[in-house]
Each structure stands twice: as C-alpha cells, then as structure tokens.
Length: 421
Image (tube, rainbow, N blue to C red):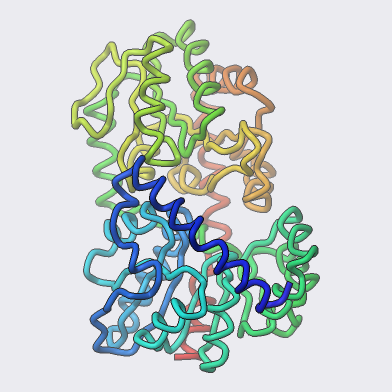
C-alpha cells in the first residue's frame, strides 16, 4: 500500500469514524463535542514559535510528562503544543500542565485536515511518542523540512510482522522521512531497521518511562490517603484492568479475603466508560464497595474501592502494599509496570506482557516483578507476600532500583531538541 491507496482508504473510512465518535458520545461524555478539532478546524491562539509533542493517549502522555516539563522550563520563548487522540489523554494533559502548554486533538490523518492544522501551527520541531506514525502528517512535515523525532520508540515482533505485509512500502516511506528514531532498546531498533529505517537515523535511547520522579507533594498526598483509607489494613491495587480481567481480579480478591479478611482492593479500570460496569460487577460478587469519585473514605467494612477518577494512578498505587498491572491476565500485552516500581512497590503481572517486554524482562531479572500464569497463581503469590513482609519490601526495593539504574533518556532527548530548535 502506498500513500495514494492509504488516502482512498481514509476517505472511505471517515463516515465510519464519525459513526464511531457518535457511538462513543452516546456512552461517554468525554466524546461529546470537539468534532471540528478532529478535522483541523479549531483556531489556536499561537503568538510564539511552536514545539509539537504528540502523545496519543494516557500512557504516552504520562511517559512524556518529564519531557514536556523540561520543554516548558527550557524553552519559555516557545509554545509547547501537546496533542492527543483520546479524551482520556486530553484530560491528563489538562490535569498535569494546565495553561503552561497549548493542547488540542491531533486531526484525523486526512490530507486536508493535516494541512489546515499545520498551516496555523508551523512547528519548528515535532516529537512523536512511541509508534504513533501517520503517513500524511509525516509527509507534510517532511515537505516543510520540519525535524521529526520518534521518541521512546518501540516495535514489538507482532507489530513488525503486521507492518511487513501490505503496509511495508508505506512504513518504509514514513521511516525514511524521520530525522531520528530514538528506540527504547536494541531489539526495537533492529525491527525498525527491518522495516526500512536507515541505520544512521537510529539511536538506542532507553525508555523515557524510567524518568519517573515522585514529588514530595505526591508522597504527602499518598501518606494522607493511606492514613485516611487503610492505616492498619493491607492494600493491593489492580491498575489498568480490562473486561475479562476484572472478573478474575474479583475472584482473586474473594479468595484472598478468606485468609485476610481485612484486605482492601483498589481496582482502577483502564477506560472511564467501564467505571459503572466494573462497579456493578463488584456489587454482583457481593463486595462492600466505595467509589473514589464519591469522595467518601472506605470504612473497616469496605472490601473494594473502585478507582473511577482520571489521573490518580500514581496516587492510588502509592497506598498499596502490592500492585498488579492489568492487560496481562488477558491477551492485551500488558500496561506500564514502572509506575508501581518507581514507588518501590512489588509488581505482579500476568503472562501477556509483550507491550513492555524489555521493561518487564529487566524487572523480572531483578526480582522486582513476578509474572503469574492465571488468577489462581495471582492469589497464591499475593498471599505469599502478605505473609512475608520482608520479601514484600525487598521485592519493592529491587523494582525501584531498576527504575533508578535506567534513567538518562530524558537528557538524550533534550539534546536532540537543542540541536534542532
């Protein structure tokens, strides 16, 4: 597939995209409004040169947070424009940065939409997080001689094999128009080269996700919440959970309560539109429930807290004794395990971790992460940690050390910006 056929496909798919937005709008307030923004019609107030950072959703935005903060402080004479593609990513940008950055959705990758957007933005440099590559966006940026960095880049074996099919020519074209690909690990870099990236454009930069720093303000909030919610109770947090996985988490908690009747579970669904559904599932099991959004502290009888707020993952992980990271007991590839690791918490994941395979391998090798095959093994290992405080503490310390040992990516990315802006 070349860019001509890609554009034909995109035009044909646009009505279905609009129907998708309508469908999501019916289920979630987050998707109502801002449709014009998806097609490059929003007028932005830009009075200074622009550095553009695109981070598609929540995970990429959180990962990009240290970089965005450095850009804001290091380039006050520029607007830092942060684009996302999802409402949840948008909320994280607003919560983390407020008015210190400009924010909008990245338009859908139609030639006209991208042209309208870039005509008013005119970025001096563009940093795209991970693998969020769009053919028309890359083509038009390259035509304008705009430097493009693919930062924190990752490419799984599964994704590479998918691109090696009919999309190989399109991927080859895009990769050749980038200035630099800062791959997380050598294995990612090798896959990009196989897809057509010139080797001279490749650097191995490590993962910016290791650049997590826990502020004193956040630590104070975590301590206060722990004291308010569970000063004398063990707590485990299941973060970024999915349908098909929530049921397993609740079954695990039900099993654990037999031996640890005061154990509190905080479950944080991955998607906001699932909050009500997960609450109902917990209720159907028979748990005594509190929803975080209600602002009511759990009492001694509460068995499950539903983490139904956005942008509080680190806060809620901070009150845990043990952390489970979701998308891994089902075939979703897992989510980022570094947030609990940066807090010095022992991390548990299921067998599906291909989205973060290199990071998980490092954590497993250090003894900071334990993979389990199923919910039965999850219950057994949590029980083991609850019965052995020393093992629990040592495992958390090993996870934290992996984070500390792998920092430095941010400095390398900022060096690229310094050379281009």
